[in-house]
Image (tube, rainbow, N blue to C red; front, side, top):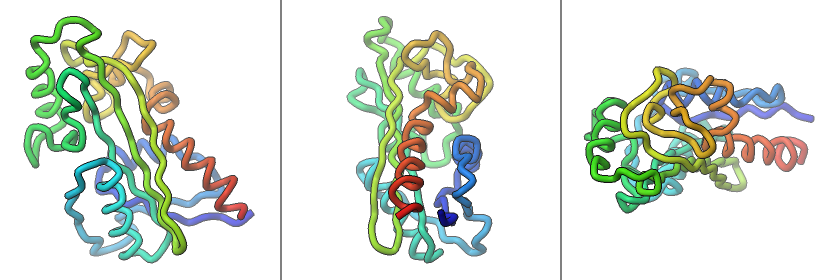
Length: 202
């Protein structure tokens, strides 16, 4: 069975670290942006996670000329009509910090007291492009938004997201547990399953 060399098109070091933690297959070698000097920035102009993931993967494949995957992740809050959604990483502005984003979310949810009013889900879309085809995968993790930030682990909205079936936020859970139940873990599992069973061995 041949080894697959793929490029992960992301500038987000936290996502890189999480992907490295989850992606443990010995048959897959992952390259990153630092392996490619002068890698260009790409503007995420899509209206959906699927569109943004595709934009990033096409940019990555065009530059590296090797099999590439990219991902886009959004947090969708039911009571806010799906906000922050595609604007998850820049909810409080283009250069907003993780804290800026989740504190703005908590402020906009102050009037929602019941857990049923605070339902939300994370969704990650991975797009994979090779020479001959493009394929997308998705992973979803349901939960609720806490009323205040809790925990020091993780990144992004982890301090305010309580996954379904738990009482702790992602930022309070052990990293190994989070990386088994999260949206990103679920989509990576699908992606790796495809690579190992249908792509590498093809």
